Image (cartoon, rainbow, N blue to C red; front, side):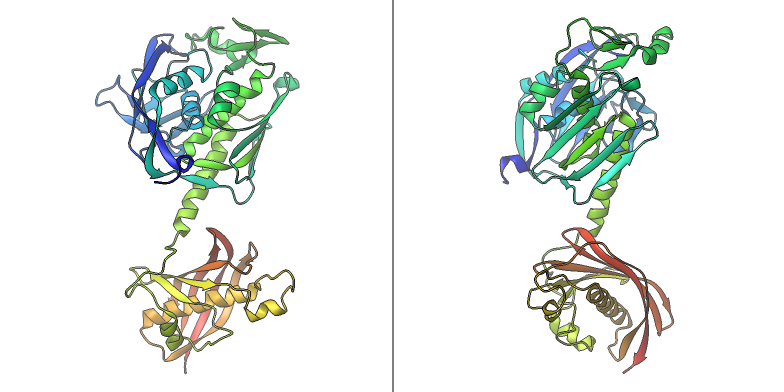
Length: 442
């Protein structure tokens, strides 16, 4: 089993509590149940026929106005961000959140009640690795209402630096923390929901927040703060914004390794960046290839390659083909880049970087092998005709292993073909292009 911080965790037993629904004012109960590895967080509507469940994933996001609502089909669960924030920050990866209503009890408007339930239940490790999203390049979201989120690399963990500012910059506050169970329980979980009176007055008049009161929210009216108890922190507002961010980001379904800089964040901006994270996770998964060369007839070894290609050292740019897809239109090759490559002698001496033209040549050779495999002959030689949309995104240096992807996109008879290619290092695309070839007899 992997070391404790790197494995998934669930609850050791079931625990729960009861409280009031924010919208209806009725009494509702919540229970947190253990769940198996790779289950994720699911909300279960105990009050409905068949007791349907909803995955807490960004794909199921339905609404982000003043709270986060998820749903599948006609089933909805409202205000999920506080319980998701507590589960995520306290280290729970897999759980069933069972409720007898369409939203969790609001409690005191913070995540503290959920943290207390999690501590009563206990946390148990599972024999499965955690899913991480390591931020490799800056990502950002900017909305029309002034929210700005920037996600930067930070391999040491998940850090949030947040600036909260209300209308006319009232109650501007800033906080920067590394997210972890102890810090979250002590510094973030107790921070309560806050609202501006001018925003909730219409809802109060329409009786749409029957369960809302000074017992579960801090109300800001002008420059005054209305609350049943004093502020728990001088900067309680920005702390609650961080609480919401953690809960909304939990919808990505993985742990984030990065530094988030957030200015005037809100559920809509949080959701937009979470959606971008989920999309990037899917993109990386689509690029994932076996890191071990398969045995048998799944690819081509170096001897088989030189029987097909006319290239030889130092111009042979592919070591192996590790896979062909079943349809025969895609393949993946490997090139190990060493300091002994002859082009490093003159290309940026003292700062060796693989020339982009050599990466294009590597893509061309892999594409040629794909096309020769389809034609089942090595009696022809492929020649470049054009290279379109070529982009170089990151430098390739000695010690890198390049995974070269080629996909046949067009073929005209037996003489012309076009292939879409890209090179990948450490799950990041370093170069790409669309190449056209013509094939002539030797």
